[in-house]
Length: 157
Image 1 (tube, rainbow, N blue to C red):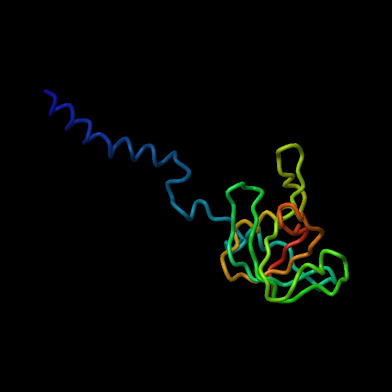
Image 2: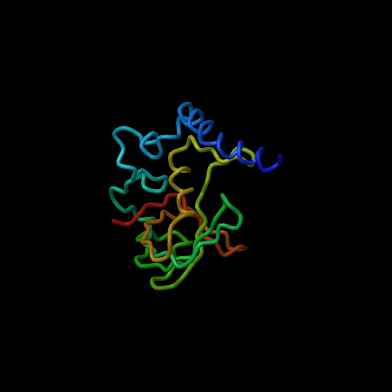
């Protein structure tokens, strides 16, 4: 009797599955989820384009990423081009040396303010792979943590 019940249940599954698929909007696969007019290349980290480097910007190459305290990630990067600005914290940055940078995120309490365009852009820094070249606008330094604050982060051209 048990075998007969199992056999009947197994034979009825394709019939039930066919009905479920007709109502399921995801049954058509990837084509049903495709967005019209999109090439699928939009990315959180590729939204902002850098027009011209400002005097307080540096070019770096990502060495490693620490996202253990996401969304407050940090990345270690080697400086390729130093800033032209003479502010005091730029005197600490030397070409060819490696430093830690923390993207600046606008927060309300413990929540990230995703409506801010630069916060969205900076949040993408948590996903850059090694050897990615970036342009970083440095807005300050936390000497206690030995971390530079990255107010704006752009992909290098």
